[in-house]
Image (tube, rainbow, N blue to C red):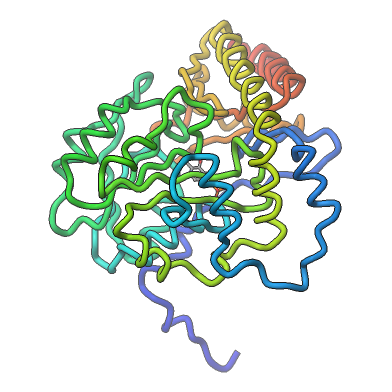
Length: 365
Ligand SMILES: Cc1ncc(COP(=O)(O)O)c(C=O)c1O
């Protein structure tokens, strides 16, 4: 190679800091409980759209008006206040375009969704971590967040209920942050439908609250990539300017999103089953000697294993084609924990039986 352009890459782009996901193998018996996906197939109406969609040669609607109207009908906010993207991860790009100048601060609370730190740092932000308290409560340090905000702060992000802990922070705590800081507060409620509370009222009341959501979890469309944000009214023209053409949502994904939201009874029945399975899995884990599972308001459960390293148990589960999530980064203090997504009842039982066997073999259960 005669020439390299590596020297032109922006300093903020660090290969070492790239967001990483452990690979998983598609095997006929694989059970995927590592990415908090929905285990259910498309709803009947969405499947019908998939079978008949024939507009792939056409660009999607430029402003994604029909998708935004379907979301508007679902959550009760005007379509103008709703921005969509190719998954919630893509809506973070709109936040970056709107708010992040290199050198600005973004306040987060680890352990939380790893994409925030990676993505905002990639755009030159200083990520300021105000950590959660220790297990099992993982308390949000509300005063710490408020005092971390200064004139250099571009935004605060809170995830409620929080990934990967499953913790539900109180609405009062989130409201105290929103009303105490002048900057934008992004409230990531990717798991809102699994939780007894949401933050829609804050988006109605406060001019600095941005509620962030996705169709990946509750609506089961992770592979189609549809996420959305509810933005303050006076920001609407800026949000439109910051949204890419077609909002990065493909025509088929928009059509499937619309059809899924038209099949709410199906989604709600699936959600109800997952919530009851979540409680079953939590109770079963807590009956296992040396295992503690934390309360969760999401579609996953974080649990602590006996010993100080979950790696061998993770590996033994993977050997049985069962995939769960491990967080080995030392600063997260979760090396002895695993996070399991809630699957179909049979998948949850297979996971649980495998874990019981693995721990018995290791002499820890
Ligand atoms: C808290 C949180 N926010 C955002 C996302 C990204 O969702 P999407 O699939 O819509 O990009 C996830 C996915 O796991 C998540 O857990």
